Length: 451
Image 1: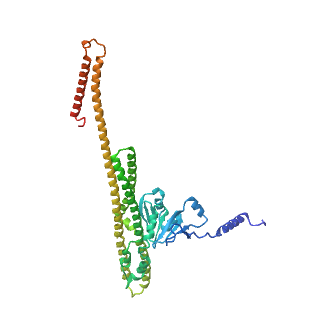
Image 2 (image 1 turned 180 degrees about the vertical axis):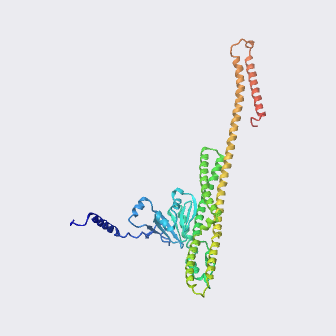
Image 3 (image 1 turned 120 degrees about the vertical axis):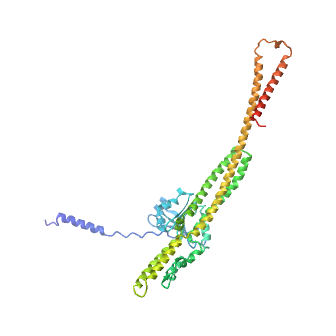
């Protein structure tokens, strides 16, 4: 009894020690790594004023991610045309642009040469042929920017984005905070954001460049197809051979693939043109400005509610301003004229490209019909020749029958006549020739043989 505490008290004390030990906080984990750690590189674009930065997620798991292939190369462009190369995984991209993980599968190799333009809350996922990018109101992230097909798109972004007048979002938001309220009443949002109407938003500038590059690429492919198609088809029309038929078969398969690619881009644009809600969701800059204005309106309403506690200021002004701003925002949401005009222009261009491909296919079909007619004509000539040979064989068979009958050593008076052999052979051959001409004339009379 004097050795210490009872058994159940010692057990409880051990539990307290364990709990106390478990409450000790482990060493603080390092902060999450940034999206990129800049390291300047001078590759093929050393003469460019834009900075190319290689970014990689730093941390102990960096090597494992690269070895596992999770991190992929992206190129980031901002509104001013500044570019940098970043290397990050899917989770970093999802956190940065706030898109669901399934949208990144659309940008994967499984959906290559497909066409999708998806609108999300803060981003637009663009997958047009070889261009796979994520566009926000402030930047664009291009997947695999060093591919040979993507380089023209990157060059166009470098050339056009710095020269385009960027929309000053901060100034518009400041105008919404300071100048949109005059005399206790709020001005409508279109008057506060009048500067936005002078030029397309950033996301539409990027979309326009992407559509231009894709349409130019498809047009060049169609031009190459036309340049190669017509000589091959003309040669086939002159000479039907196995080599020319193989060239036409390869040409037709290339045409079918190219038509499918053009049709995919055209159908995606047509789908957007048919749905105004989808087009309105693509206005990322407008939604970003509206969020800023809503926050400013909430802040101003809160300040007005504090000042309106005095009996000298009425509450009607704030309610009226809120209704005006709300109605103007709703009216502005339905305005998709700029995007509709942009998409219609490239839809017409793609429609023209599709018509060129269809004209080449019609020319191929006409050439195939002409070749089939030639082959049918040759086949008919062979049939006519076979019919003539059959008639001749029948006449010769009759003459052979007569000669065989007199070659059986049957007693006959004609054997005793001198010189009868020549007359008999001549007369029988003449009769067989007459029979041949008679059957041939009957075949011509029935139009079994050509003239």
